[in-house]
Length: 306
Image (cartoon, rainbow, N blue to C red; front, side, top):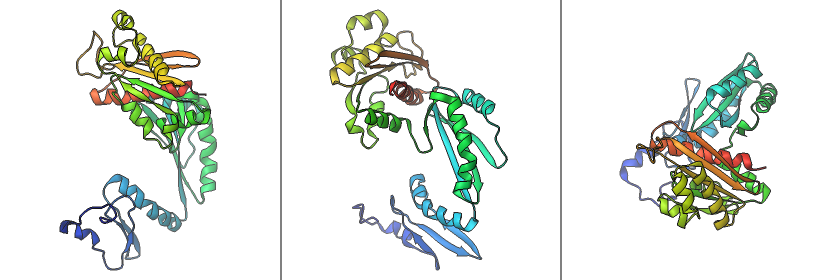
């Protein structure tokens, strides 16, 4: 593995090559430490590498054998929601469905995304899916456009997929997020066909010189305002020749700016149908506010794509 990655093999990691008698080595396609499979006293033992992304890659092999041995199949279906808080989503869920015996319902919130997860176990995958599918469809209909994806979907991937399907493009003018939105979009394979580019206009004067915001707008309303967010979106759309422009401005903290408290964020999308703006007050420290602002911007963009 070290040779494959072009690393020099230090003596200190030779212990990673130790294999207990009778054990089978499980290949690690994304790291150097392999997994191990060993039967002990009639029980099956799997040893996994520690880093989460390596564990997930190696455990895929173990999961298949565990499922065969158990005689049952576990199935999880997930709806990904944005634009509503966990309590709001839970209210909709709980008045829409009655969770049947044998089905577990969980809410997982993080990064301004709420995940509604249903899990069950059945003798076959088809039987498990027959239990979960109608519940998921009822919830998706009740939650409406709050739902942006299912199962393995991510918000950036959904945005890129919709743009690709429509043959459209986006450009971004970022202030407080300073490139995080562009990074999130370009993390997705195929994004080069839809992402025109972005400008990081952290300094107030660059909002005018790079993104095309009229200085009079900033003078009248401030750098952190709905009007400036709209002008950022419209300016970057025009200058970079995109179908849609996304503009973000706000105060990440810890100090206020122009009388705006930390967490004040304005996002705007300019497109063929006009310009829409959303203003939010986001909780948390500087890093969290910036992360939540990315989600707010991408979610607003997602809602304009048809």
